[in-house]
Image (spheres, rainbow, N blue to C red):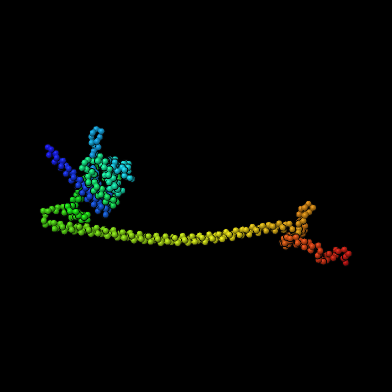
Amino acid sequence: MASLSLSRKKNASRNAAVERKNLITVCRFSVKTLIDRSCFETIDDYAPEFVNFAYILEHILSHRLKGHITWFGYESPRSFWDYIQVACSKVSHSCICSIENMEHVSSSRAKGRAWIRLALMEKRLSEYVTAALRDFKTTRRFYEDGAIVLGEEANMLAGMLLGLNAIDFSFCLKGEGLDGNFPAVIDYTPYLKFTQSSDSISSDEEELRTLGSSGSESSTPENIGPPFIMDENSWYNKCKRVEQKYRLALEQKGYVEELVRLREAQLSESVSQNKRLLQRIEDTEINHKMEKKQLEYIIVELQDQLKSFQSFSQLSADGSLSQISFAPGHFQDGNGKHDGSNLSEGKENTPSLLGLCGSLTSVASYKSLTSLKSSEYLASPTTEMTSPGLTPS
């Protein structure tokens, strides 16, 4: 009985090791197929490569996951989301809270599937898995011995998921893939044509080896004749694959060169526009300086004109006062009031008289005028007739 139980334990441990190895190998193959598929089209919820990868990752994270012990001692099944929720809670700017607040996602398995899709769109799936594996106490609390996340395969898993950051995913978080009642079934048929030799080979050679013909699955050592034909077909397929990759790289190279030429043309145009703008700014500054100088000169001239106008107005005011004071028609009566009504009685003030009165603004001119009136009279017929001693004939 002891030997039987010991052999069962050995078989169980061997089977667990084989299961871990197979899951990691299939996960690596699924990552490769995802990267190859992303070169030709966008990966969405309906891509079979992604569906298979999501199921494989779900199996890996659920491998030997402990159940939840209730108060009554019963063990209820758990989902890997319970582990991710606790282990990734310290990740900065994580999507854990966003998934918890989703109304249409209720079950724990559905939240885990939504987390896989959202982490892929954020290109942080490897970061989340690495942070969860570093929390060793939480990992030991949620998983049993022999789990993938507790073994050496865990480091390989984080490294494989790092390559998915180069892919742009587009998922709908309300799709049918989030149904928690739908089981995760892995489809191994796309990976049956992958073969792995015992020798250490490069990644390119391994990828070329995996892309053999469809009949390579049936090739066995017992077949002696057909292997030559299979080799020809496999080499033909390899050449086609390499040619396809070369054409793809050539197209990408042409696209990048065209993009570089476009950016160079845009850069040169921007530089020329910048030069034109700088020249325009310099011209505007020169014009502003000239206009400023002209305005300053005009202001100085206006100030001079204003000063001369003020002096002229003051002089004209003084002249008007002197004209009123020394006008010959003005005199004072007995009360000291001026009366200028008897200058020329019965005659109108013509412009010539006004000009004459305006010119007599000094005392000397006034005295000369009065002396002229008093002493130097011209002889006239009326004076001769009216003088005493003379009688008209």
